[in-house]
Image (cartoon, rainbow, N blue to C red; front, side, top):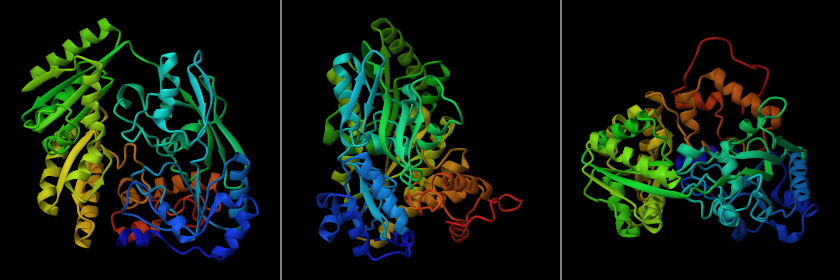
Amino acid sequence: MNAVSEQAITAVSGPEAAVVVQALLQVLPAHCVLSRSEDTRPYECDGLSLYRSVPMAVVLPETEAQVQAVLKTCQRLNVPVVARGAGTGLSGGAMPHAQGVLLGLAKFNRIKHIDHEAAIAVVEPGVRNLAVSEAVSPFGLYYAPDPSSQIACSIGGNVAENSGGVHCLKYGLTVHNVLKVRMVSMSGEIIELGSLAPDSAGPELLSVFVGSEGMLGVVTEVTLRLTPKPALARVVMASFDDVEKASQAVAQIIGAGIIPAGLEMMDKQATQMVEPFVKAGYDTEAEAILLCESDGTVDEVADEIIRMQQVFEKAGATRLQVSQTEAERLRFWAGRKNAFPAAGRVSPDYYCMDGTIPRRHLGRVLNAIKDMEKQFNMRCANVFHAGDGNLHPLILFDSNFPDEVRRAEDFGAAILELCVEVGGTITGEHGVGMEKINQMCVQFSREELDAFAAVKRAFDPDGLLNPEKVIPSLRRCAEYGKMHVHGGALAFPELPRF
């Protein structure tokens, strides 16, 4: 475990593990409670393996009533609870608390209802993202948010992190495709947020909940908005001999009034890493490639593809290739979606960052990352959602060498802080979790952090749901030494610090 993750785990006063396990066995069947080290260790981290912690117990409830009972029991015993979906997250958000209970939702894996006429699906949180699209495909529908991990990631985790994907530019993030959420509060109360109607009475709490990273409640049911499958989709792959030219082409596509179904960018290091693995047909000599998709009717796609090609030619593209078949289109996307596993073929470890910047600064930031490679003496491959400026630099390192771990973390922190400097944000879809909690101090002022904490307390007054993540304490920010400080009195001085 590295130094940062050790700091993330602070002892919480409470009963011994045996007492907690015994209390859980009073409300759950024995096969739903795991407490032996060999059973709990597989849950020690999410997809971001830099941060690890073994929980005192893992519970795998099978019903909503059991979730309620677990939360009530843990609240009575003052024991932290971390909810977990498929464990594919990349910010340490599902890392367990050492003195807490890990609540796994893998058994909540039913698609409860599909209404193809209303284009909605009601699912449990453990349902895989891709499974939704597979189930509704016979009705000519699909679920639009498509993270690279969609074959494995769960809808509950998508809700927690407000996940996106390569098609989020046109079809939105999770928050734009969720109509209702049913959740259980730390006190065991069942709450429904959202509505099937275009609007619902009162404050828009659904938007607050989506992306809250398990800090406000535990999801037990989600109502999803489905999207009609387009008649046709084609992809233009454009090669550029300069990263700056490719970055300018992104802005020019949007400036031309074109909203692609997807607009992704990969630099040379990324394409040379991916091509031997996927054989997607990428131009590995280009300094950068863009994947730009058009979907709609046959006539709409034909017209838009011509317009896209004209923009790319004017921007200085050295090569243009248009997918001619559905198989070729899927192969182009397979390369982009398999960038992370491809990294595992060329490096013992990789650290995937997630910052978002204004599109006009793409070239500047990518060139700065190149300079950082020299500064930190590490390689970095760039794959990202260019259309909305959501970067995913892949820092390659070897965790067998502690100094490389430290440099990888420092490299990642420098990228995130550069994102803030150019007017962006420290995350686009991976969440804050443990990974970016220090950079929250850079992006937000003391007053803003207190406002976030006040929302957390409104749902979870005792701070037991996924504690010590996302919202840094003022003490942590002071220790990090980079807090975005504004003048004025401390908000909510009567409330305890996290």
